[in-house]
Amino acid sequence: MTAAAAPRRPTMLTVLIPAHNEGASIIPTVRAIEGVLRGADIAHEILISLDHCTDDTDEVLRELALQVPTLRASVNPGPAGYGFAVRHGLDVYAGDAVAVVMADASDDPRDIVTYFRKLEEGFDCAFGSRFVDGAALRNYPWSKLVLNRIANWLVRVLFREKYNDFTNAFKCYRREVIDGCRPLLSNHFNLTIELPLKAIVRGYSWTVVPTNWYGREAGESKFLIKEMGSRYVYIILYALIEKYFSRGDYRRAGAS
Image (cartoon, rainbow, N blue to C red; front, side, top):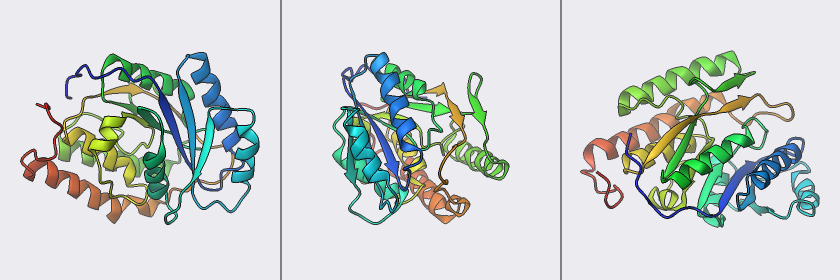
């Protein structure tokens, strides 16, 4: 793990939430995040990247924005897909740090505060793990759990890292990391591993904290198990080639 440097202290956090037909879940998700961040006195915005919604998500957000002044929404103008939605949000967010959070209230808002405090300490990235002491995992489908553990074990072996939850989307980055990981290539859920793998390979500092994950109570999951196939392999191979054959051409300045 790369040792933490002492970059500029972040002052504003963007919570980026990609949303496709999340009208049933978005209100409790936003209210919980807003309450926790306000209570922690963290300057923030909650940015919803609307991904070709056909339900009432847009209408719900317009009404909610009247009550939550830190909330704004932006429509993904590109093709539909998780990766496209997150990439759009990363093009328009205002903070000097960003946490990618799911819309279904599966991520614990209190962990966002922990992430931000780690960035304040000097880390470039804060990665959560649902599979370490102190973490909680509830209502995770057994079939997805088996595939998750196999995929993360493989990534750990290939990249020689101890981190065990690469595929979890819920992570936090300084703006410099996002800019340093461009261009982003993933159009779908494989973006969840592209960002951390590039950040690690390019020499940004990072730390791991235990996080809580709760199964969604409303709406439908947008993740498909087939996403664990060729698209993930493509990004893993891309990052491996950069790690072992790029001769450090893409590493951030000053990285050891």
